[in-house]
Length: 157
Image (cartoon, helix red, strand yellow):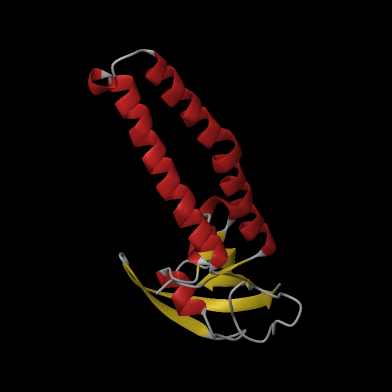
């Protein structure tokens, strides 16, 4: 059974763009490599041909996987989302209770997580610990460094 994943419009478009690139740029490039290797003669001892065919197989598997992911993707409708609790796509300002540091994260699906952009996965320990919390709640989160306590300062979209 295929897994359904949730995406923002931006995240889904990024996937579709990557699939388009694989099909329109990389697939023709590999076909060219196979044709060039085939033109060099005896295929039984042609390492270039074997390598190009292997690359083609890997690319086709990647394309099939991406097509499956896109076919099972669901777009998240941000218009009717509730800001009273932390959900996927919530922008959450949290305060580390032990050192007073305040940081803001946006909770996203696993495949859109990007710590540099302050987007954390709802599957991460912090993401899981924040889900369902309200402003003023303290999330107790088990991390590799021990239990951390984060207070929810604000929730927005």
